[in-house]
Image (cartoon, rainbow, N blue to C red; front, top):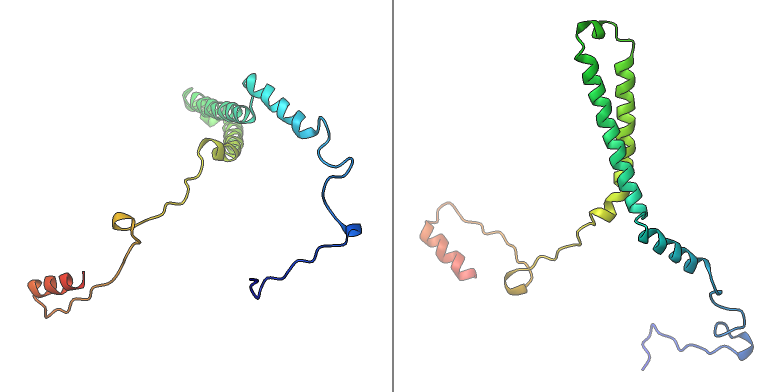
Length: 156
């Protein structure tokens, strides 16, 4: 039996038929997807996957930024004379450090989904898998604790 929102499909005339096997249809031999897959497998076998490149680049940038902060500290450890004649060297090092950290953070943001996948939604259930139940119990101030417990027990 057909529902009201369903219609019988009309079969098209044979001359108007679409789809089906046709000469020359389908993926061609040696298509790009197959070749791309081979390249990815070779790269993975050599240990140079895109994720590994991103991670090593991120770590190198972060390490270089750390070296910049050490250079600033080293510059300040030379005494007051160096600080008095600061020609913008510390400012330049700080700006370079910030740029390196920003580049490392950008790479980290792109690599994060592969390293730390998002948690799937968690379904919360009540006792023995039953749906959660919630409610509000209003207790008048005139009730004693015993009366309140009796009223609460009666509802469960």
